[in-house]
Image (cartoon, rainbow, N blue to C red; front, side, top):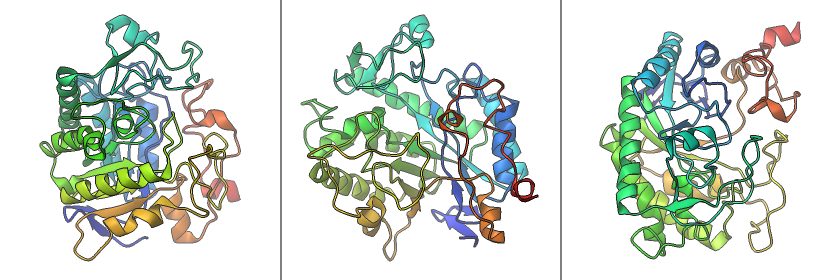
Length: 367
């Protein structure tokens, strides 16, 4: 874990330990602030090999987290540059994670009300849930089905965002393709009712995500690009039957492998894990018809498609991250857990550093 590696044959990392993207809802007007710079610099200082920043919106949005970051213009570039410079100063590498929320939005949230920008999705299928913000009464029914023109517009938004990410000093890109958001919803048969080139067959349902990947690859070398997927996801109405999951991800992963990405990040949300989990994310029992085989782990199931002799793509298998994980592994210190409850994820907080930059270091905890 602590040995240096080269990602995708292109990017040297000081070790194999990577910090996964964690939404923290602390940005102001879509821009990282001084607290954000400190947050990422502290984690780079620990010695983690690579950081994937929190999901960052690529267009006007109506998500539940009004203080989520964006990257759509030069003002955002300047703010993110402070973060990337701080991480690089500590010897770390940092990846940008572009995000379009799709149907997991509400058009009554301020930015969409002000701009009139639509809630785009592959089909007019409302997602249940959505009440983390008091102004949001569930995810909207007011969905605009993506047509050819808006599909091209959104793909261009992805391309433009990763172009700006390069200007902002990021070392690579990790495409967010899980969580029930736009990319993911194209993959899900019950969320994608289309009968055109983007719907129906597995090949068609995967087409949009692959077109987005190809747009990213027009700006970045393949070794600097990854993707985050979660075959077993159960968040935001994303749970699918096992047969659909296997068919979809077998095809998608093979197509991704043909593009020789730097890595594929396989998430485990939606399965029973043999360890303690944050109560906020702990999965409940899967619905009837969506059960998984006993002991099922998507990492074990799909690893053979990614790790094999001659593969240029690395496998990332995610789990909860603690700020000092590299140092804890190096010194044999037990991993810390969350003892502060559910609000540590997104707030509300009384001050910006609360549950963000006020966690004790191991030396402080043990003294």
